[in-house]
Length: 315
Image (cartoon, rainbow, N blue to C red; front, side, top):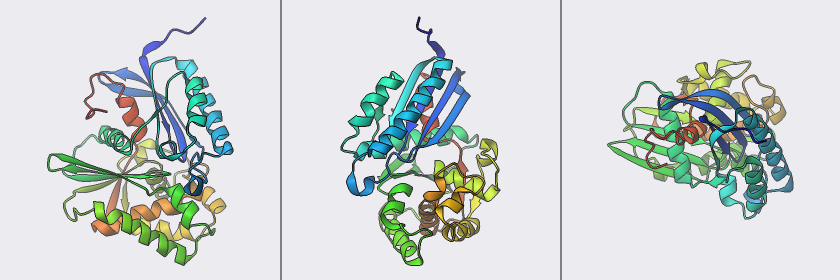
């Protein structure tokens, strides 16, 4: 006998290039209250920088996590579920080899969303996490395979999805462990080359907001958290001087040593150097002195899109 769906409960799933995340929540007055939240490092995009093909190992790891998420969902029986795939699944020529079985396991078709959709959902998640609104601002969501840059201000929205990812940069240019100074310089040059054309608003933003796993991991490292604490992460002000300190520390450690640092989820240490370099270049280009960290992002935006009374810019 099938369990009865609970239409007060909703679930969002973010199938990213580096990690998969699940959020189960209950609807409450146009908002949501979290019931369960899970994260697993899958590295779905491993090796794709050269091949554009999901490896058999990546598919296997991904499906194992999807089965775990289905088991968790079965305990709550959500009435509405939305699962979204991002850069690795946008690019992979064999994405159907993962999408077909994963959709069958979840019982819902997985949407491979565009870079613009990903950015809009990330923005919605960021805005929901800050109680106080601010003027013109820029949100940067550094993911495993891409970076979404969202400028909000002047009564308009400018969205760019860029081919800069912590996984892809690590695999293509930071192959030494720890990375050499020449490799670091080359990565920074490439990041700046890609960022500059979309960051022509120097001095016109009141706040730079960092969203996603790289940003929250850097905050957790700065705070020396023994385990993730969303309340302390949310709104944390990561200063440029502190990011420089972290960059130097991380750049002198091996991937295994970085993985042992408190505050990093398993596997994040292997790609955190590239992610931190993207944020450092953003600060330099914008002449900003800090990043405001948001615990809310794409995953929360996916869940918000399931709330019928929420206006989310046609998401």
